[in-house]
Length: 464
Ligand code: UTP
Image: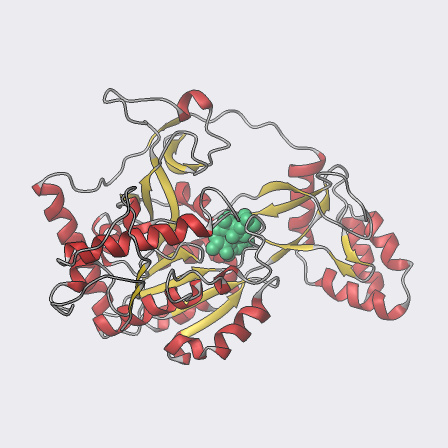
């Protein structure tokens, strides 16, 4: 086997790795050869050529503002969203929806030494991100009396620990037959100058998850799309593990996607400022696309409209709705996502003490599917209701800002239900308050459900 593998590596321009493998004793040589054999070397050779060894300069794209289905600001808007909500509810009742939780990332910025879903986030309960999402799925399932399967995308980096954690917590009460985990692909990490594949140990390749865009191939490989078809499901809502405010299978978003007859939809919220590090929805060369904050020229990023608002204000939450047939086109390679390079500092046997960036990882991004869709919808929702991700250990988008947003939303919902919430001088709730999704998924859910003598005079957890 090893001669075939090293020959294939040489053909793919990886002579250095081939020579290192030949120099190994038989047992470690077989181990690394098995890893190499599982790679798509044709793809790796193309990525190394196009993104590392001989990058071809691309012409700057023509960027324009996106068309957005705005939050309602008048009676017509309210009735349009009501129709969307009802269409979403109908689809849920008919069992046409599945949710996919993206949880394959490495969470490098947060630096939490476990899968991000294991991060305790409940301001009172310390419930983990996984528990909050599972509670939301369970509550939706009960509400609509439907199956609503949950698919969880992991990667080799965190698959075993994620599965073990979920098993220990008995899937947080979800039925095993409607929870499926699947693993996204991995791609080799290469030297940032030469494109040579790096090794994390003499007999092990340095590998990295292939990005959230890997969802399409992974769903194909794991036969998820066929499973969905058998279950009569044609709508897939995907969301990210790090945002506990997101409502899984949100009827309003699903309905807006359906009424627009979109193949792929994006849930957006208003950016807080031009400088916020958040990708924005736009048109690129005339097609709907997401432009990363690093790719938006500063004159566009800061551009204002006649009312003084940002032209590029629609920040992506990373939440999408997909039509199953569209996802199948991407999974089978009939429509393919581009890959991007990302510079990293990686300790490798071939480079044991790097100073600064020494390596490149390759990732596909889910939002790159947008320009490939025949029709898209960009649906705005209230930021304070739907978006507070945990990305960083400190500062913006940290555990502190996320739990503060959870408490602020719970306090608002209570007040809307007629309960007085004591507030400090800066307007924040005096006490931590948490509302478990099994108790309520919107302010309206609380109406008529709270004891009339409810007084908030200490930390408060409203669970089922
Ligand atoms: P991010 O882009 O924020 O990446 O992922 P991350 O891995 O969580 O954090 P950093 O960038 O290393 O600090 C957004 C969502 O996409 C998922 C993540 O798990 C998260 O839910 N994701 C990301 C994947 O599922 N696979 C990937 O390869 C990358």
